[in-house]
Length: 302
Image (cartoon, rainbow, N blue to C red; front, side, top):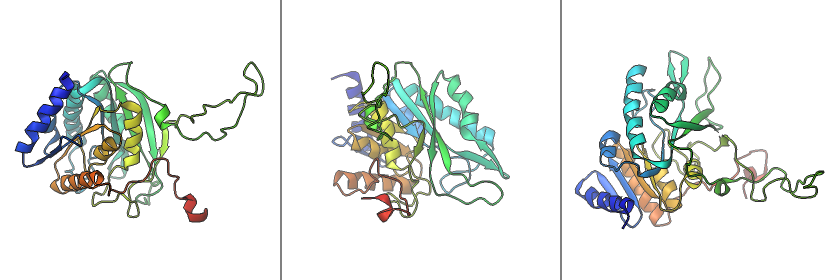
């Protein structure tokens, strides 16, 4: 048995002793209601091929305490340091954030977090813009309709698979009209690169994945990261797990999912969602489903 598998087995065996923990050796899941620094302290170094999360934005929502921005950044630095420690050398760290707002002024969190990631020798590969159509309506500034996913790696030889996340080409039958490739298809028959602007609906009241969490991840957003940045059987970690969307995305594609959160209600929902997925009863929005368009019959959905 290799070192990674031994570490996996050890963690699965330890967790049932903790009443806050939920683990399933068959599913490949370990989730716990605990502070993320305490959770990650038990994890082996260099183990996770993908760490994907969306930390609190320090806005005073029901699952966080609002603190001075400097204190928030100091706490984030501790979490990022531990994430870097447990990140696989060929792994990816994806940090999804929006804006910190203070007295009507916005501070893009990825800009103030950037120096912390660089301090840990991480390299920024993409700043992905996640655009969504619905949210709070502002009155004294434009309404915010995007957040960013910052994709970092430790090394240049990181795991990367483009084919599983290609999207349909706009002109799939287009051909070269001159030169040595005249008459041949000018685009990849498997589809095109989805670019660094992604459009997925955020999880609002009519979304099939909606729970009581006010700001949960859509599963399909994490699926795109899972498929492109990991291989089957790899371990994936979400240190701010919420209701477990990252864990569901990992399970859907044969990966091992680790996660933690400090809110018991959210961890309980995550466990229930995992059990529902195991039974084949969990509803998620399918990858690649078009954005609902009220101008089209049935919104453009089949």
